[in-house]
Length: 450
Image 1 (cartoon, one colour):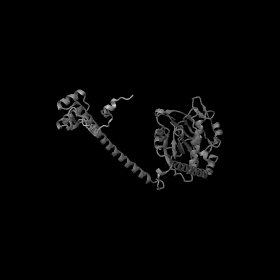
Image 2 (cartoon, one colour):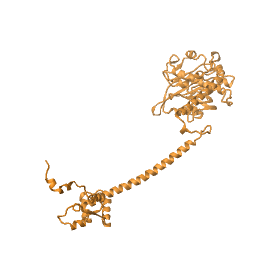
Image 3 (cartoon, helix red, strand yellow):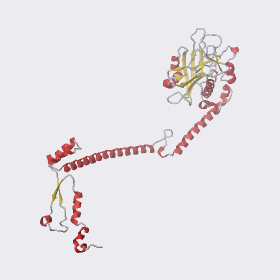
Image 4 (tube, rainbow, N blue to C red):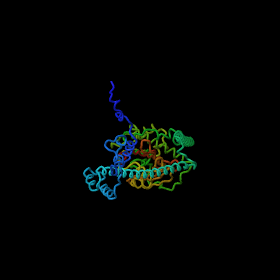
């Protein structure tokens, strides 16, 4: 079963012997050898002295390789070509190797090492820039944190550490502020509701005063301008609406009126809010409150109005005093955005200029509220104006009224006028303005429905 030659020839076991130290050194030299140099075979001294019959570890020793550094000229030539073409093809490498006396592989490896070196330099430069940018952002972030930690409240001047405040705490603070405003509003309404009942006919509650914030607004069958009941014109000074007393003449011209008394200001506020409610209810209503005449104009049905508003603001126009009511409404589309329209109505100079054919002169006596910063939402002012019609048969009409502007939740603006003649204690009033005004709805492309 066993081959006897294995025992007769012991040299056959040499194939299973471990490699010598010289073989391991040869492998290490091959791994550590750089590819950018010239590799030259150098025979060892043992190989020169041993004959062909020699055997043993010295016979299998590999030839050592010697590293050759490129000359300055070779490096310059290869760098010149690298600037023109970092990736030379095989033909270019062979031509360059013949000119420089190098092996084509040496040229190939030199270009590979050069590209790797250039890439490493570029990455180091980019890393340096990124580190500098990172340090800059860290410093800016630290500065912002310091500013937040040192922030102070603009109202009380105390510290306001917003960064350390939880979401629940912020929500509670906002809720407390809202409840505090509601309590103050309720106290104000309760304080003046008794005085208002004498003029309005019923006490004003919190829900009554905030009607405009909750009620959905609809323009009704024919939305737009609402004329007044017992007055000379709407908020925009529209023609053909008004109530005149008997006789003619200019009556009382715009005489200087004292600034509104502090005791009357709460009453004016409630009258304006109530007038806003009445204006919106009239805008939502169609027939039978508004009927269409033969000229296709919506005219107010006075009997239906007195039924819906039995305790209307101010005294009713009595027939035995010669009063008669005039009221109508109309709608139109205007090439102007609602903000500009509201600004014209709330600025007495612009209003009297735009409607110079109707308003002969006007003046703002007192501003009770300027509204929200940037617009006239919530603005309330006391005004006096003299209206005229383009006819010598109709006398001018002077009015002392409050104008109130409100922007509702659906984006519709409302401007309402209400007469304040009862507060002026005039001996005789030729005409008075019941709640009248206009609604302005924003349309696309800068248009408005007025």
